[in-house]
Image (tube, rainbow, N blue to C red; front, side, top):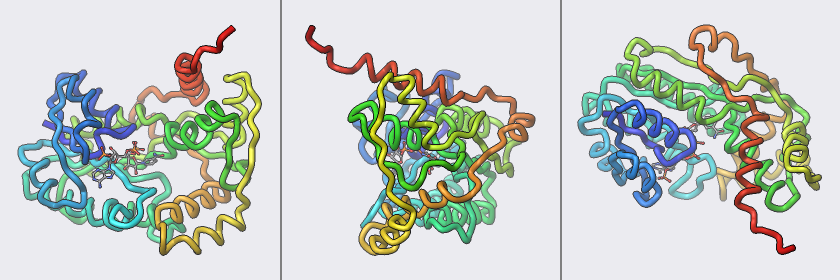
Length: 304
Ligand SMILES: NC(=O)c1ccc[n+]([C@@H]2O[C@H](COP(=O)([O-])OP(=O)(O)OC[C@H]3O[C@@H](n4cnc5c(N)ncnc54)[C@H](OP(=O)(O)O)[C@@H]3O)[C@@H](O)[C@H]2O)c1
């Protein structure tokens, strides 16, 4: 049986569905079981748990063969800040998984992690990778690029579709890589069900690189509307990230990450990973077409 921590999220829920479709038993951990009602309908066992509550992690890990860590708290502040959830919570999860006799731990890290990264979130991900590597627990590390769900849709497409306006952090002219959470979930499921993948670090990205402004133009073209685009200048972002850090570390690290996305090489070549793991990769344009169609279907009808 496999535990998915973050099983209600974009990637974790896709992984849960894939595992259930393939006949595996799945336990989903969430802070609020109501969020996992649809997965429960599909046959998942749902348990209440929180990465900040070590006892709940021990209960969630009991009897598990594999664990997928697919949770994060990048926007968190106060008791939900990354230092508590993404750092300490994940170290606890690794410890209790090991104590429970879990045979394979799959950790979702991120593309570009390093101990000197300008955004704390990516330093924490690196720290947890190191912790896992020294734990003695059999593991696989996934390093995906930016998810289409969050970086293309939530931050760019959705505001355009809903309000006709979007605000970009930075210039939005730097090519970067977007990957579908569903595609990352395919790798997670492969890793969970393939003990020989223990020890692997897999970089995962979509088939092409796009700038944020190209994503804006894509939504405009597919939705047939023009967007009003405003930009938060890089200088303002730099100052704001420093000023708000003590009050809102989540927003601060998102700002720091946005500066990094806008100013450093963010391109990804999926071919080396594809040669080793020939998985189908979703193109951004076909993915956005579906989001636009769903949005048009759910828009209120205009009285004629
Ligand atoms: N989004 C990206 O662009 C991106 C890029 C690279 C890597 N990643 C990594 O990929 C993984 C999945 O990301 P995602 O975007 O699919 O996530 P998501 O949709 O934003 O969902 C976040 C998940 O984290 C869980 N969570 C938050 N705080 C928690 C806590 N204190 N205890 C337990 N669970 C908690 C939530 O569960 P409940 O609310 O149900 O408790 C939810 O299932 C994460 O590790 C993320 O860092 C994401």
